[in-house]
Image 1 (cartoon, helix red, strand yellow):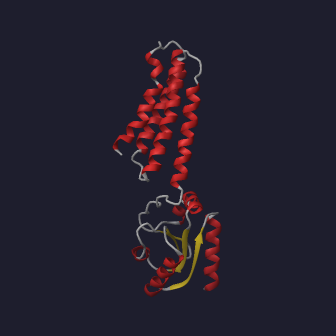
Image 2 (cartoon, helix red, strand yellow):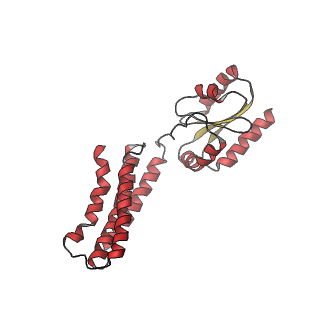
Image 3 (cartoon, one colour):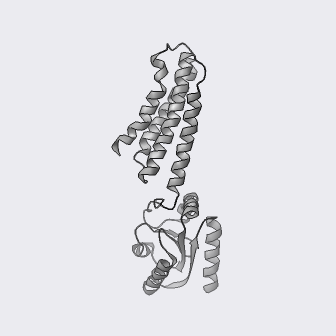
Length: 227
C-alpha cells in the first residue's frame, strides 16, 4: 500500500516527541549519533515498502525497522534532554525484533513468495550466492531439484522452463530448481527435454531442507552412475 512508506517516518518522529517538552541540554554528541542511526533505519524501512514480496512480509519488515528507528530516536531525544532511560526504548527494540522475526517466518512459510527469476541461466557462483535463501525456502516448502548432464545451450534450456523456475550451469551440466512443482512435473519436464536435447543422465530429488552442497553432491553422484 502506498501509505506504508510513511510508517517508519511516523515512528521515527514519535520517538523524538520528548524534544517538544525539553531543552537539548544533555549529551549532544551521543544524541546526534543515535539520531543519525534512527534516521538511517527509518529510511531503510521506507525503502522496504517497495520490496517485491507479499504484503504481509513487507508490512512486518517495515514495521520492524520502524520500531527500531523509534527506539533509537527516543534514546536520542532522551540523550539530548539529559533524561534517564525509558522503558519505551526497550519495548520498541523488543517489538521491532519480534516484527522482523514474524516477517522472516511469513517470508519462508508454505505460502512464501518464489525467489525472483535470474537474468537467464545462472552460474555456480550465482547458485552459491543463493544457497542460504534456497535452504531456508526448502526447509519451509519443499523444492524439486533436477540435475541434467547435457551440453544443451543455456538459451534453449531456459526457453523450456516455466516462469519462476531457476537454472544454473555447472561443470558437468545444469541444476534446475523447480519452485512450486511436484516430482511428477519434473518427470514431464525431463521427458520433454530428452526429446529436444542430448541428455546423457539426469537425477531428480524432492528437497525438504538441509545443505545445498550435500543434495547437489547426491544428484551429481546419481547422474554419474547413470552415465
